[in-house]
Image (cartoon, rainbow, N blue to C red; front, top):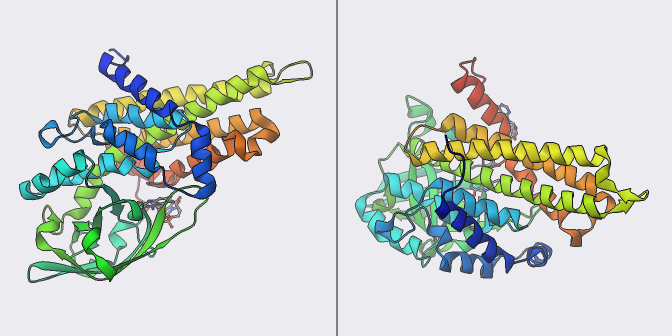
Length: 386
Ligand SMILES: Cc1cc2nc3c(=O)[nH]c(=O)nc-3n(C[C@H](O)[C@H](O)[C@H](O)COP(=O)(O)OP(=O)(O)OC[C@H]3O[C@@H](n4cnc5c(N)ncnc54)[C@H](O)[C@@H]3O)c2cc1C
């Protein structure tokens, strides 16, 4: 068994690290203060092909796997940056790639790969359904050669920064399906053609992340923009979630490493009571413990990624990676706050920004409670709670 990275993976790590060095913490802090989008950073990632790394070469992408993509995202986060502004451009296209018609794939994937079209929005969550996705009520009705969609979505990220939006809607109401997970469909919505049929309202958040409520009124989507078969949307979305879980786990791992790097450096330099604070076990051990947790999560992440890239079932591993990575980054965040003391709260130091950012991974894209329920019920066979 060989756990080391390949030469290509090491090259990806060092290339992304070099790119990120041009976007220091002061860049991210400025954006955080202004709640601004990292346009220049996203442009640079696009030009260097990192956002199309998962698109097959036949469609103009890098043709690499989730393991490689996870290294890209980890490095962005380890540098003090945040990939949430654009990470979905990497993986949202997976649903289209795996389930879209040849016509849809040929039309969109090459443009997604070269960055001329952005597909970095996906709309699943609804205010009255929450984590219970089958309870969504956004309705798509086929009228002639178009679907007409009405409903509401919430917490939909990057709608102002995407051209296409992957949208999950009910094509058959919940009370008319055999299984709750039946009757939902996925649509590729071209927002540039939506006009006034989609109203969006930004939700102010605790960190610099652009997310909105969407109000859909008689939104018309050509029938050709239905992805795969009508009624099988939930199945398609679930298939894409394993990649998302692994990739977001990698961001949390990057955050965890950022905190451990910064905390151990600070603890070695800051002298109080005549010695570096890191000589005190009350400071040193939480950082060392967080480091161990991040390393463990990283191994599980690569295990899950290798299964995904081999086309094998990886639900248990992807969920476990997400759980462990989000807990490890939060543990590291708290150890860093303890090590930095009062200066952890000073905005210019950067720790408080990352502290706010990394909390998200315990909640989204799925709550850790639901991950535990998945492991308890589907992996360990215990009774169901829902
Ligand atoms: C910054 C941000 C960006 C997002 N971006 C997107 C996006 O682009 N697209 C999109 O579709 N969604 C997006 N979301 C939504 C996100 O996926 C949901 O917020 C998340 O899945 C949790 O759902 P909820 O907030 O509705 O929680 P709720 O369903 O209201 O649940 C609240 C809490 O209750 C607990 N809980 C609920 N049910 C159970 C149960 N059966 N057992 C145990 N505990 C339970 C969980 O711990 C959960 O955290 C985003 C959210 C945020 C905060």
